[in-house]
Amino acid sequence: MTPEKTVARLSLYRRFLKLAKDEGTSNVYSHQLADMVRGTSAQVRRDLMALGCSGSPQKGYDVNELIKHIDEFFNTSEVVDVILVGIGNIGRALLSYFKSGKSHINIVASFDSDRQKVDRVINNSKCYYIEELSKFVSENNIKTAILCVPASEAQQTADVLMHSGIKGILNFAPVRLKLPANIFVEDVDITMNIEKLVYFSSGKRK
Image (cartoon, rainbow, N blue to C red; front, side):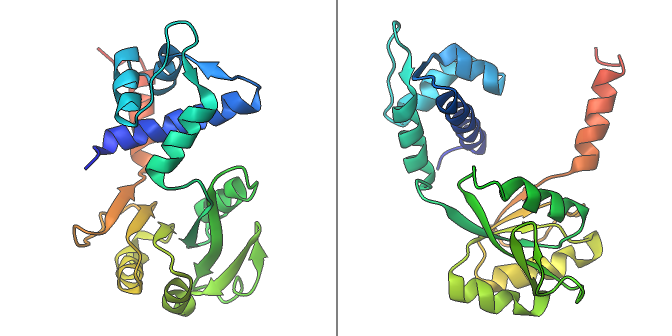
């Protein structure tokens, strides 16, 4: 199995490569990708070699070929459908971010327990009542969810997602979810990240 850190780097490489492609760049060097992920050129070359990609000292790597290989690795040459649960401030911000259509991630539906939000289209995503979640996931073969509910509702909602067939959860709720090992959970703790940022930007770093 590919290590999580390698998967994260490949995702960052692809983001950089697509930006470079949009700007008309046809070739990149390993040191440019290394700067993107705060890594080393050697690490970049190892990551890309594992995908069957090789560059040249003169021209570097072909941008289109790298994007193709990374898409194949993630199996996302086409748009991937995900759902979002919890349309609070974070949920709305994420819907707004992904509605541009520039990402291969497509939020096909959102869910909330607030009846005033149900049946509305919020930032290009239709909101369904939370009780409709299991049926929607099953009928549309959704495997990935973004969880933006309050901490008090997170575990119960995660359990529903799991039993509905969800295999991966991006968790913005400030709580550690207790789920089986076959459910991949990526926690996003905004408070922790900001506190770490404040600590290291305050001059306390040694």
